[in-house]
Length: 111
Length: 115
Image (cartoon, rainbow over all chains, first blue to last red; front, side, top):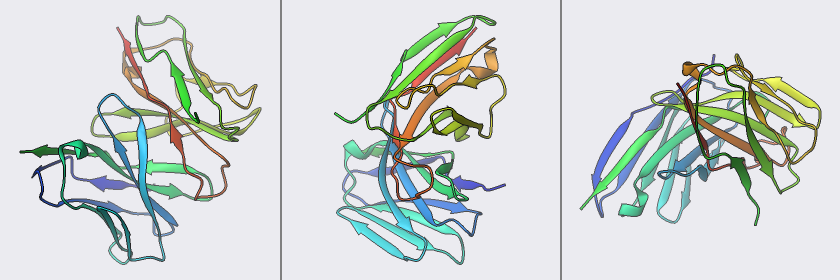
């Protein structure tokens, strides 16, 4: 079945850029998503990218999609302590609104 | 305020004691879904519902039941909980099930421990 993989941990210094990577297997995925989960909270949709796009920028967030390699990345510029959270990559399966999630990348931001 | 609410937020119970986790949304969404989150596994879908009285199994439905008698509510029922159902549970909803651009809104989560 479909699978989404991401590394489990990333540690960055405050002010640096963070890059969180994700690979997926379903080549028919139309939309790919990034969700953020802060401690003790639910998931918040950060951004999404349509599969016919290569890049999407939204303030400090840049999403890059390499459809050939099925690789998705999320870049956070000028990372702040408030960006510390778990980031989930997700793809849509089939024609329904079913999300297939990666295991999540825990981002730790240190001074 | 548009939101998805879940109750309880935390629950410790014992094996075999039936429990229900409630989920309610105030956005008139058609689609609702339950996920469980386990370390290293991300979120996995348990059950989903495309509208009132329409429910279907997700990837990990064993040991769970759901019902959708009203549009706003989608309770998750554990008839006989077991320790392997210890997890963090999320309810989610979206306007429809068929449009991929419909944002899924997540509840705050219910942390369940089964002893």
